[in-house]
Image (cartoon, rainbow, N blue to C red; front, side, top):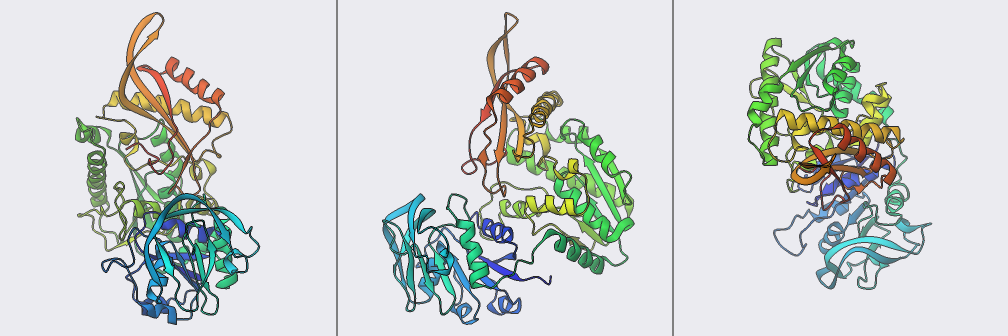
Amino acid sequence: MTHQLVIVLDFGGQYNQLIARRVRDCGVYCEVLSYKTPIEEIKSRKPAGIIFTGGPNSVYDKTSPSISADIFSLGIPVLGICYGTQLIAHLLGGTVSTAPTSEYGKTETYYDCSCPLFEELPPKGISWMSHTDYIASLPDGFVSAAHTENCPTAAMQNKERGIYGVQFHPEVLHTENGVQMLHNFLYRVCGCTGDWTMKQYAETAVEEIRQKVGGKKVLLALSGGVDSSVAAALLSRAVGSQLTCIFVDHGLMRKNEGDEVENAFKDKEITFVRVNAEQRFLDRLAGVSEPESKRKIIGEEFIRVFEEEAKKIGAVDFLAQGTIYPDVIESGAGDAAVIKSHHNVGGLPDHVDFKEIIEPLRMLFKDEVRRLGTELGLPDYLVWRQPFPGPGLAIRVIGDITKEKLEILRDADYIFREEIANAGLDRSIHQYFAVLTSMRSVGVMGDFRTYDYTLALRGVTTTDFMTADWAKIPYEVLEKVSSRIVNEVKSINRIVYDITTKPPATIEWE
């Protein structure tokens, strides 16, 4: 790609991709590479800047992630964040040791506004800290650029060499003006011009796909969700009738969704194949309650069904997937921990005759995917379709899966989503859905005792789906949703609302 590049070197923190997300918000393209990437490869990419991410280790531990100090001789501006800052100090001769007082969470911080990172920002603000170690002595040529009550070097700088570090996390929204600090590094230090847009990405990606595919065939598993739909639209623009999409309807979709997916794509230039496999999936899931087992069973069965249909088509040259960044992150990319497995990451079909994988969205975050979908001309009802996990409602039914439970949840979830839309909240609440819990409780309806399911409602607001806050849905909307569900949906007599952030919870329950 021809636009400017910033490289984010990943040293193992779980939420490091947030840094990449914020950089792109500033109009600058970036890629996340492992800290193990050879220096020569980094140099060959000609980045405008390099960012060292955080991580859970101590830099003075010999087994901790590190990199050659030669990277500072490339003449490329460097910004360290948390562990990344400590690593810079350690590599350049400073001292990092266990702090007398650890800092976690929101911390009042004082900034030197002559530092390019903090220019034109308030001299005091809240930063998000998460560290046990601290920089006890600075390397030669560095000065402190920020401090807190307990941390004398909350930021450091060497203007002459273009090397900077912050002990806190500017990528986390809890840090006041954190994104502007990253913006200052990109534009004031690295000289970035802001040439990253979805229009340019679409043009570049279409051209790259055409060059890669040529006149050959492409096969895509189309779920009907935002990611696979945008991938289909992008591939369709690039190769047209050379694309075949197989829609595996596993019977775990939301109400009417299978038909909606088919109607959205049946008139496209692409070849669209729908496979109705509900009973097959229900048979495999019978009696299974553990969430990771559900995910793996559905992922495996999805691939088997896909393989069987693909065999009917014959050999194809390319297999396409709608994989996006959060899928890769939460499946344990690099040194990050596995939060939950994703059926479209690392689970490739063994018996489909293809030569290569295409993942045109792999470097995009969810909101970037939506912007790309709009750029490609997809209708709003597809682009703004609620995020939906690959395992579908199977992980929104807590415990074992039955057709009856799925129908209960489908009807309740439909009412919830309908009332959110009726209230005009469908764009401001970024994800909202119902969960059928395994808990039953006593109720009373029409003077009769009931013993029915408890339904949980979940709504979150987020900018990246890596962190999320619970949505403050007006009481009157929740009241209407509750009233409609208990009156219109059988077997539910209690409604609860989930008010947990991510972290510590995930957005999905399972």
